[in-house]
Length: 126
Image (cartoon, rainbow, N blue to C red):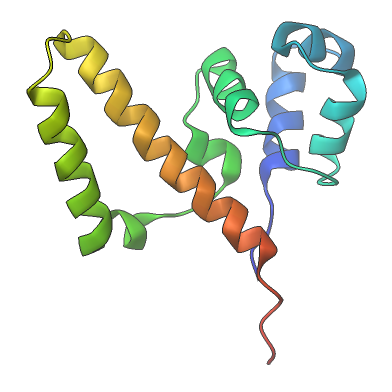
């Protein structure tokens, strides 16, 4: 069973930054009750909110989710997809910083979607 660490880590970061739930909600442009729901693992943020949290606290989405995706990162399918995206970006006229930003966002998105899917799985029978 996947343990949702988002609530624990979000609260820890919020307190380290000496912010109230209302303060963080205002910064992220969401309600205080949404922050409380995230911290109590009653609901998960949408992708944009998750990215905004990571950017504000200057942490990786992986850290917020508490997901170890080393096996996923080495999978053939994942690497193939990233290679294809990289090739498309290389043929674009974007600068290197923008290309790297897009690659990071795509990678974070995949990891977030996996985390969301894992949340929907029924617990394993022992």
